[in-house]
Structures are given as structure tokens and as C-alpha cells.
Length: 90
Image 1 (cartoon, rainbow, N blue to C red):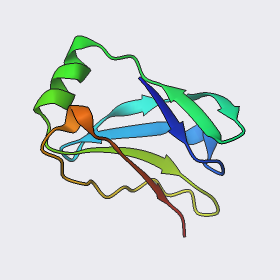
Image 2 (tube, helix red, strand yellow):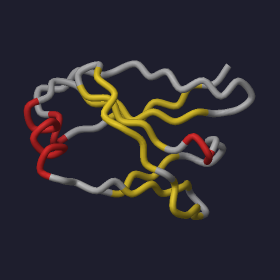
Image 3 (cartoon, helix red, strand yellow):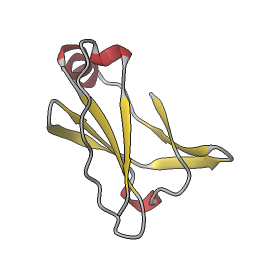
Image 4 (tube, one colour):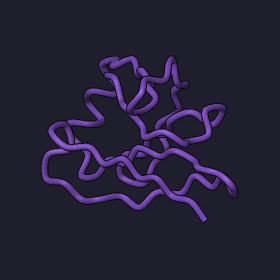
């Protein structure tokens, strides 16, 4: 799966994924394009199962100056069809 994050995110922190309030892991950014930075996530069987059975999924990125990476999940009846990218800055 490829996720395009907006420009201005802190690249060393990578992209976090939380499903049903449980941290699933992080993926590093592989390149930046004129419209954002790309992270690639390997979709193994376990992750696909978690996404299909979950009720919410949140992608988390950090932005300067504080660099906090806290996201607010958005409920979805079908997580596999809808993802939310949360960008927080202070």
C-alpha cells in the first residue's frame, strides 16, 4: 500500500498506523514528490486481516515544530475501504 502524506511532515518519524486504538507499526518515507511524501507499507496477511476486521484506522505523521504524533481515529464501518490521514501540529 502506498500512502501520500502532505509536504512538511517530519520524515525521520515515518508514517504510523493505528487500528482500533492499537499501534500496528511504522513505515519510512521512500521519496517525496511535488505534492507530498510517499510511504510504502507491506500488506501481509495479518495486516490485511486487521484492516478488514477493524472499525477504525488512523495514519499518523508528525509535523514541526513540536513533532508530536498523536492522531484522532475516524470510525468507519469498512476500514479496508477508507483510511484517514491525521496531521497534527502545534
